[in-house]
Amino acid sequence: MTKAGYGGMAGASRDNSIFTKGKEQDALDKLSLSMIPLSSSALRNARLIKNARMETTVELMHDPVAGSLQMRPDDISDNLTNSTRDRAIIRALAALNSYDVYSLRGSLKRIGVEVEDEKKLDLTDDMKLTLHQYMMAFTRPLVDRIFGYEQAHGHEDINLLLNDPDIARVRDNLRIMSEKTGIPLEEIPRFLASYSDVFLSVAYYRHSFESLGDEIERFMVWIGELQQSRDVKSSPRMVNACRNTEDIVYKLTNSVRERMSRFNKAFHMFWSDINRDSFEQLRKQVEENHDGMGAVLCGLLVKIRNWSYEFPDNTVGSPAKRVTFVMTEIEPGLDKLKMFENEARKAIGLPPIT
Image 1 (tube, rainbow, N blue to C red):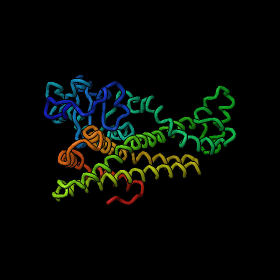
Image 2: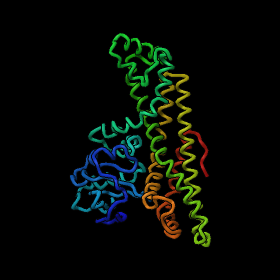
Image 3: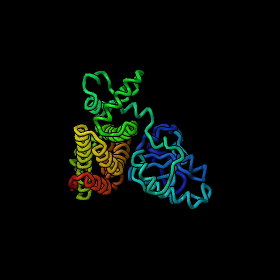
Image 4: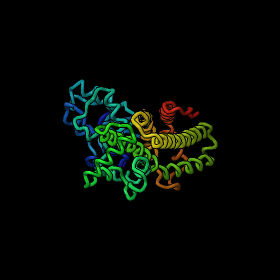
């Protein structure tokens, strides 16, 4: 497969995954336009995707064998839509930095787009099942804090306590939760739904980040070895490009890890004093970081994924090919990711990375 081009017909995309319904709903870098109120049926059957340079293309067709037909958002022709509104929506969506469902909720409100199916702004059941491994860290302390270890023993999820066949016991559980939290009984279900959504968003970002971990480590070894190449050492421009790339990727990954740790501390503080106000503080802190977390993880994802596709192991490619890839595909846009990361750090009281 060759890399997708622009300005009309394009070659095959580097994304060799099958374009199946719902798959992009869990993605950071893809947005199905089927949920967007567009007048053009051709565009509604398309999707937006991010490339390694964090540019957005409109993918009109995807086939695992034939490849991908893509075009720039500004090159949408009258054959696809003669609606100025359609074009304006596509341009606004193309300017977003991530298409994960959590940052997308706020982004769509800001640009005045209402989706036709709110379920499209939620993770799929498959992804929620994948995230189940993270759920214990968020639900168990809440269960223990409110109900006590003995009563909660054996329960992995607070929903199990509230979906018990014994209706009287469920009512008693709700009453205990209301008394312990100060939240009115009738508002408990909404509180639990909001809590679940907040911790799922943190689990989703954590899972997305950790899924890149091994390849990011391999990349750091790869680019370190590249700098020892005689060809690279002879060119100050190549040396600077490699060093800058290595430095920013290293700082971004450490910073994202630090933000994840900050979220964990925020949950621990909430568990120590569970009430409506402490939850609102927790929710605000997490949700105000959705944009920054989505943007940085989306950028890292597409860059590391494309690098991994091009260099599946550290023996592939000459030094010239490697350094060219760094300078044309990896380094461009890293300063922008660094800016996003610093904005996100500022929002939760962390100093900028330099």
